[in-house]
Image (cartoon, rainbow, N blue to C red; front, side):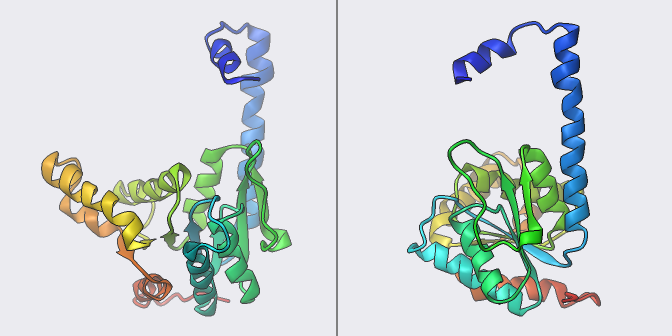
Length: 235
């Protein structure tokens, strides 16, 4: 179905049978994805999600940075969750997998674009049709978020995390953006326009995230954040 056909279909009135067959029964597929995700991820232990572009090639410096970051997280006892696809996601899973850590992939089924990478533990591959369910899994089962350069999807995931923490819907977890040169323009705008010019956020909201340049800085921030808790990674 083309984009134009989808738009036309959205404006058509649906009869009772169409509603029952499509919209109502869709609830059961949504429930099934939630149940499958909850059952598999409840057992994984402390993990950090690594976000980033699916389009990053393996010779890119950020691919190498994501792989190194995942390896360091594994050495500190954390599992790694990625979006399950290529690019930065593959690099994150590769770093964790080759270092002997837990490597989780939350793959989203997209036409002509995404397939799960080969570095995910076979029992930790999840396939999703719905972005919103996938994001719930990221937020519910991550003890921190490390964000490398990416596009709209990366922005969606990272700002979802910050919004949920800002509004008190989830606990305060560390959020670290890696790559100062890539992210500095965005967060200069956040401070200058959102905070100082329009007052759409509070000054304390700038403390929801850190922007760093190295894998060591990112992982150090994660470990320092949790040093004050009695609970430690349990694997």
